[in-house]
Image (tube, rainbow, N blue to C red):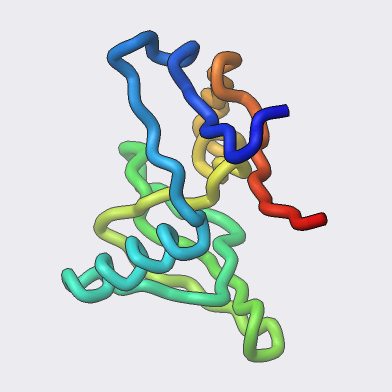
Length: 116
């Protein structure tokens, strides 16, 4: 057991591959705030329950549930939709049915520091 061993991801993409180790919560917040600063309408403490589509299969609306103010719900019309549901993959699992897992990176990592 090496002290302060750095994880590597060479097996995933070979010697030319790379990865960033980031604090997930800080990285997510940075991207969330940057999107807002660039003009995107962003919503915090909400969960998308379903997506509405037009006749050509393009997403046109999202039905949401608030996790903060007593569970209020609503629908928002969208011109662009980013599925940021992570492993849940709302679009790929519920609608497109095309979810594929990359066996090379289907894992979970934890990192910590201990004394004593």
